[in-house]
Image 1 (cartoon, helix red, strand yellow):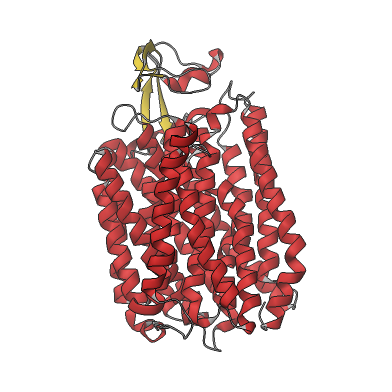
Image 2 (image 1 turned 60 degrees about the vertical axis):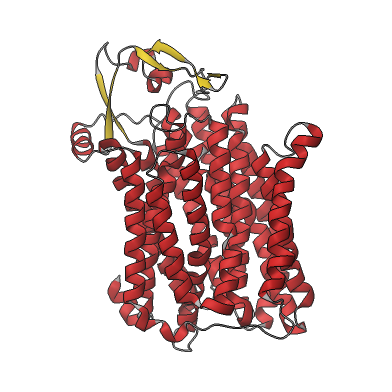
Amino acid sequence: MNETIKVKHPKGLTFLFLSEMWERFGYYLMIGIFTLYLKDVKAGFSMTEAESADLYGTFIALVFLTPFLGGLIADRYLGYAKSIILGGLLMGVGYCMMAVHSLPILYLSMTLVIIGNGFFKPNISTLLGNIYSTPEYSDKKDEGYNIFYMGINIGAFICNFFGAALYIMLGWGYAFIAAGVGMFIGVAIFMYGMKHYRAFDIKKGVKEGDMSFLKIVLVILVPSVIAGVIGWVLPTKLIGHALVGSASTDAFIFACVPVIYFYGSLLAKADKDEKRPIAALLTIFAVVILFWAVFKQNGTALTTWADRYTDRHLQNPVAEKTFSKLNFSQNFTYSKDSIPLYDNAFRIQKKDGIVLKEYNYPTYFKNIPANKLPAEGGKVELWATNLSQSINPAWVILLTPLVVAFFTWLRNRNREPSTATKIAFGLFISALSVLVMIGAVYSGSNGAEKVSVLWLVAGYGVITIGELFLSPMGLSLVSKLSPVRITSLMMGGWFLATSIGNKLSGVLATLWDTYENKANFFWVNFSLLLFSAVIAFFLLKWLNGIMEEKGIK
């Protein structure tokens, strides 16, 4: 792979690839255990499914909302390299602080990660696009983003094994510290490779007619904060409950309005030759929101499915011995003890905020058929739940070379679809993946019996194809179509769309416990993705026309 990068791609790709790989190692290690930690009755915060999903959704939404500001500051003042380094250090400190078991410290840690990602995420993607801006490499930009995307997923794949071993052996805190260490390694690699992209680290400055930074703070950011506070307080005061699920969701929705207004003002005030490209990008941003709303349930609903509804018993002696030795699994004894009380749908039972207890067998055995239960006092080895988070990145690593080769083969025959067309197909393929999970629900008689992990493997496999058609293509499209002076700002817009989708994923996941038939939960997800795909195909002719005007695919 390194040889491929050296021969066909700019040298800076190797260092950006490795920097992003380690940054994602830290982020996905943390995300992989986040809701499990929140719901842990003994060492976590004993949150319900809805409580953990709401906090998770708000967190990952804000993580992808701050690139709006980070992209703007980098474009005008700091430049990309300084922003990336600052963001990486803030995230590393935030991950390490999560090792302190305290809800206020957790919120402070999350804030550092949110701010840090705002500086890191849009600017490393923009810098990657810049090193492909020369004639020698411009036709390989899509391929470069696909390779870069594989770096993200190598980090996301390996991190969960470290996370599992550390929280099993030493506790949650050490796993969070490992996430911080990974982030610091990423920053060090980025700094080491500076000579390969220093020339592309160009501040765009302020163009005549652009809003000043002070004006943006006063007109956009301050109103966002005020709107968020209003959204948090007002609905509850006026009508006695939140408008959409929870106070945090209301606050997020209110806070997004001024930021969305800002992007609308960019379109309204743009020069004539910039209006259509900006309009095309804003349309793409809107269309992909529902993709993220479904895809980002990997850390909530799909982790719950892996934990409660998937057969995690290692029955192969070699696998059992290997996983046990590497601390990728935990040993459970089939004997009664005092345990947290869950109902038959695995909803934790509380009274006055206190988790109720019962004298029973471990919760894992609740939906194991009687003829498959171990003997009294028997032991089973169960692989760690967070390892299911490595299925998607494993598929990305396996499928990226195939997808890249497929599009290269089409390009050599002048039949490669446009970037917008790839995104539309990505949405449709992603919708098909949800049908796999509907099949899993029926296979397990709606949770009455645990099902094979192969259902998750298949579901993640299909949505990964959709992801590879959509996510790296979105980054590439922003780099290609954005007016040069606001490239990083428009990259922030892509992450704003991701942010809104992430929050919606949390909203959808909070409803998990309200569906008696879990198939209906997935049918809703399928309908949302199919609707988004139909809209994308409907707009395709218009989008492709704008791209042709600009001489790009």
